[in-house]
Image 1 (cartoon, rainbow, N blue to C red):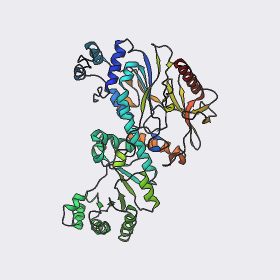
Image 2: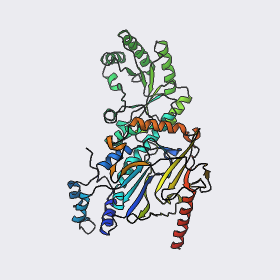
Image 3: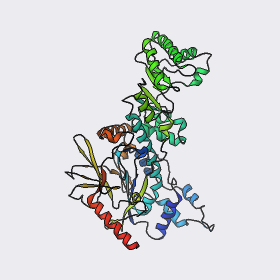
Amino acid sequence: MHTNLALLTDLYQLTMAYSYWKLGRADRGAAFHLFFRNPPFAGGYAVAAGLGPAVEFLQGFQFDQSDVDYLATLTGRDAQRLFDDDFLHYLHRLRLTCDVDAMPEGTVAFANEPLVRVTGRMLECQLLETALLNIINFQTLVATKAARITSVTGGDSVIEFGLRRAQGVDGGLSASRAAYIGGCDSTSNVLAGKQYGIPVKGTHAHSWVMSFDDELTAFDAYAQAMPNNCVFLVDTYDTLQGVRNAVEIGRRLRERGHEMVGIRLDSGDLAYLSIEARKILNAGGFPEAAIVASNDLDESIIESLKAQGATISVWGVGTKLATAYDQPALGGVYKLGATRDGHGPWEPKLKLSEQTAKINIPGVLQVRRYRNGEGLVADMIYDENHAIDPRGTVVDVKDTHRRKSIADISAGEDLLTPVMRGGEVVEPFAAGGEETLDAARTRAQKQLAELHPTIRRLLNPHEYPVGMDIGLFERRDKMIHEVKARLT
């Protein structure tokens, strides 16, 4: 059973839908594309995420009686109703008939590439805009942040710790889900563990230590209560003394047939403290004990700590991951690319702007990815209603003088795959609502490994070759000049 979220939309989607319906344009064909114009965090890529929840939204899409009753109460500036009864009855009966294609979760994506394409009746496509953006934007943002963080840990484990600082309940669950796709190994979020099958990790807080007369007693009590989950938080009073206390309790645990998992550092100079803690643990007979670190970590801080020789082996990343702290929105958009009457030919649609970056790519778009034996070579955006130009040239959207030649235009892989046909969800989504998160996570790791290291680097990354098929570029350029000529 799927939650009904038909009203998870901006009002203007409904006012446009009403106007399409009233003017007899509701059934006109449309093709919309969801994409972002710049990779987040000034990086070189994004990791697509959120398709599973988007599919669940599509499966449950309908206006129930309470929805239309609410819409009947809305009024315009003249205090008269916005929507008449016939339209509300129409909405109540509405069932999706559109087609949806999308990049599978975990796909590495780049600027201007459609992550999702929706084709079908104009009214339906319009009503899906806001919810799809809401779901895809945030999860893609967090998955990308997780990929950046895990890229600098050298294979160390990363735990997503962000629930308590996340933007509400749904923000916390969505962040845990997306962070796992992006490369985190586990989460502290127990509900996300239950709901999505993500491994959960956690130990105790400072309040546990403070509730006892002294730290040693607190550690001993925890070891007796939870002998198979002993990661001791050592910085309540004196961090290095806390490590020594952990060693003492670790020896008692070992005598009882259990092993201390490790310690956690949550404040102070993490590089210095981890190095000194490692010495104490090793000397005490615990060379395998993990050193877990938290405290407002992100990819830049972790990279710096690694460069300083920190001996941290597990990273707990919370606020700056779950909230995408340094860029709180992806900036994804949903733009009309083409329309048609009935089953007639598609007519590409162009949006002009004084900002060149905001001029859309017209057509019914697909993305073809090219590889060689060393990894990813280039991505080509092309119009499915036109054959890829035999010249095999990719033209950069922002800098049309920047071009990439493709030797064999037929050898690539098309990234947008069928999700919905005629309003019905298709495999692999039909059975369980989404593919497994592990499959998406593996896809992300594989594709990130195919990127050249200069594209993955955190600062001033090299720009991966992606752009329009040269034939599409020339048609678009012609449309731009024709539209501008009509306006002068």
